[in-house]
Length: 353
Image 1: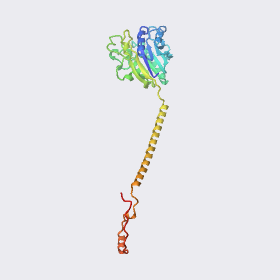
Image 2: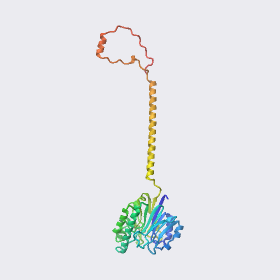
Image 3: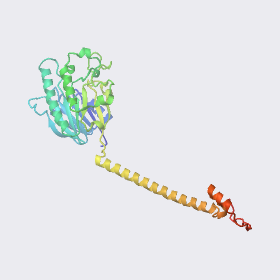
C-alpha cells in the first residue's frame, strides 16, 4: 500500500457506540485503528460486525473498564504482544501490539491517574515508567513503529483550552509531563504537533460545562512515530465531526497518513548519480569534439579563401629597399658606376587588389 492511514479512537464503550464506529469506518476508511476503553469482555467484542465492515481485529477486553483493540482492513493484525513486559502483575487491559502492513502498531490506554496524589496516580506513573522502558527497546530495534492511543497526558499548556481549571488534574502534573518529554527524548516524533506546528488541536472534550460547544478541549490522544516513519508523514488530523454526533464518545478519532512507497536506497541513488555524471561527461566530450572539428574546418576554409583572394608573390622590384647606413651612402657617392641605359620595367600582370 502506498499510503497508510493509522487512527486512534477512545470509543468509550464499544457496544453502545458500535453504530457510530461503523459509520466512521465507512466514511473515513482508515487502514488501521487503535481502540481504547472498550468496556466489554472478550466475548462481547463485535468481531462479526467489524468483519462485515471489512476489518479484521485483535482485542483484549475487560468488563466495565479499559480494554484495547487493533483493527486493520482485510486480514486481522498479527499480534506480537499483549500487556507490558516487566509489568505482569498488572491486570488491566491497556496494551496491545501487532504488525500491520510492515509497521509495528502499539495500542495503549495509559491510566488516568485521578485523583492525585494517591494510589491511582502512583499506578499511572509506574505504568508510564514501564511503557517508557519498552518504547526505548522498540525505538532501538530499527523497525517502523507507531505508538498510538489515549496517553492521558496534556503535554503542554498549548494543548489545552485553559490550564487554570485543570491544575490539580493528573493529566497536567509535572511528573506526568516529564515522563512524556522523556519518551519523546528517545527520538519519537509527536505526529500531530509536527504537522500542525503551533496551531491548537484538541482530541477530547468532556461532557461537562458545554466544553464541546465552546471548543474547550484537550489534546491527550497521540500518535508517535519512529525515526524512519517520521519523514513519511504526509498528513494528520482529527475527525471532529464524530464528536458532534448524538451519543458520541468524549474523544474524536485522531489519525496520521504515512507514505509507505518504496524509497530509493543509497546504492540506487549513487548509481543514478554516477550514471548521470557519466552521461553528462560523454555529452560534454562529444560537444567539445564537435566544436574542435568545426573550428578546424572553419580555419581551413578561411585559409583557402585567403589564399584565393591574396595577390601573387611580389617581385623584388616591389619590395622596399633596405635602409642604408650613412657610411654606405657615402661610399656609393665616391664610386660612381658607369652610366648605363636601363631597360623599361614591365608592369606586373597579377595586379594589386
